[in-house]
Length: 417
Image 1 (cartoon, rainbow, N blue to C red):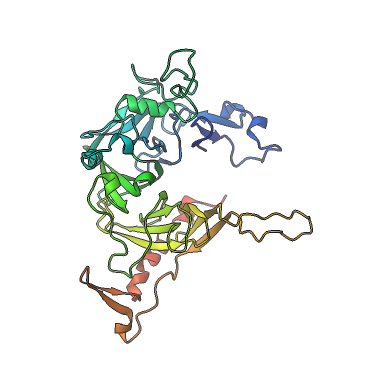
Image 2: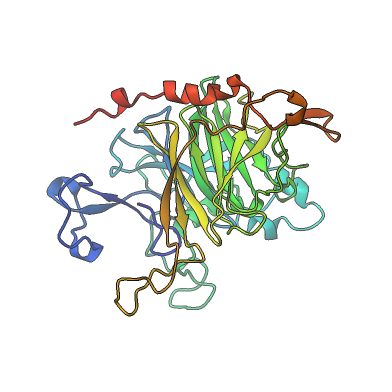
């Protein structure tokens, strides 16, 4: 479990998640310490930032952890464990640094890059990059760099004994300061992260940048990480030209990629982008399918996958079922109709609230109607793209779900006890 805005930006491990439930499961009633000595939980030595997206390498199993700092000057990090599989044993932490970045690592991405040269500065974050170390192999801070684990630091911006807005407060994380110390590249509120493998054998990270209305991809190549704009509503916040086409060669959509927050990846490696913007009568709260047919880390189209259509709700935590690949769940968070109270205790709710919920979906059969004759009833001509758009499906449109079904390895990867 990782702390985002409240707390201290820690990553906490529950020692015995499959053990007996404690009588009092509150943290204050549980024991912090050594898991092998019977403790209930422990803090892992991972840099203190505003955690939201944290994930594990697929290529370097039990060795590399990737994480982000959700801030408008937020960076992207990786940690290489000192001992594979020992998450409490520490390791070396790095921050992503674009080789050609022209801006200021300390200030917010939008404030620091304002002015006539903003597009050039923002675009300089993409391309070849490096993983810049902020600790040594044991996790100790490097000379002249803030200790990214020192949550007790109180003298970052002011003299000892001073107090005020310029001194460290709960919104400053030592991992962020350490990244700034080495010139880590800032992005606009990086949030969630998904990790996949490309056909060329390279690992690839996908990260939502909420303030920039987009998603970036980071391909781990032999020459170092390569950062690209994977998908965006409008390239301007990222300093690039244009945005990603919507529903290319499909029926058009009025939806917009307003606030990309979460990411999900299915068993075939497809990426889904989940917005946290509240629903309205026309847009928001959408889930998008990112179509990257050539697997180059840049989506050719953002296809409108679904909308919750629950007023005021936030779609979050989309996760595909590892033992049933065509199914996934989405949390329906804080809808407008949240009241479930029964103030007069008559057994009937006083307010017909929807309440927070978890929904399960199954993509089997989730395709448009069959293309029955006459075919002309199902197609239109898009004069802007000079392409025929159809609103029906052929049998080969079912191939994706068939492949997802065939990818089920649960008998091997998730054996029953």
